[in-house]
Image (tube, rainbow, N blue to C red):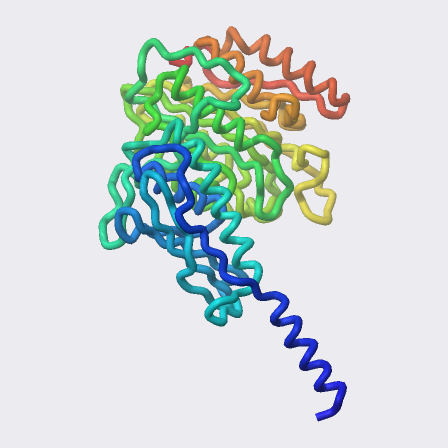
Length: 409
């Protein structure tokens, strides 16, 4: 073997060792907030979802979390043990991480450390509130029926720039579907779409009087094409003739090739949206307006100009001739409120960390107002003025269609 080859092998060996770190374990991490162990389990579940780990609960007090990387070529699995006063994260198994019995590729500790930080952050939320009626499904048991229908629960009001008036009369037979997509897999962000969706969900619970379990909330990666279609069908099944239906969407809206308008799911690009006819707005409106419910209210915080918040095109590498057909509302039980006209921007509102239309809409309705027709003039004026402060090209005027006189609840 030549001297150069020997030096190269030594160099590779040094580099190989340099990327290895001792396996870090988080043992007996104190839970600063004393709560039921199910509250700790809930925080672990939320943190795993947010970091894209899959989690299984083996038995009470013991879970396993797994993360797959590089198209399943790499895998990390950890054991998580917990009580109401502490939890621990320790190594369980790995694939493609160069584990030698005591040391592992440095990225392992990075991923596990991020999971630990998110668990700690979720503990703060769970300490104030967590869904005590959401049961943990352990391996070998059937998932509780109650957890199948409903998605992410509504969080507490902390951090929202509103004072929600409490409902004087509950709506146990009304349901809401709330969608907010900030981060997209293949497109630019829609800033604060997820936070506005969570704020609207809180409005539906506190002010409209819907039980938390009647509110289906989807944000970011939860709102895939498949999940959006599934939840639209679910809300149709849940619809009750004794109650109302509320639908809120914040995210990208795009015109298809023939001018039809669509909501854009987390995992699709604008140039393929025509392949999802069930996400066409006219189709969604028709499905919801034909339901046996008292009233249907739809709030769309999206523009359909084919551009993002900064004016960039959602269609990659082309300058399409963007045209949109006007949706026709044929049902007298449906009221539609949109963030603007079809060619308008739907702006963000950085100072409030909300979408602009959503901020003023929720602000008006959080006072207990029940007539959209009454609050609409102020809503339109406030949004228009705020949008023009960003520049003439950002002009935005909310619109109201359908039955403008029916009351929210």
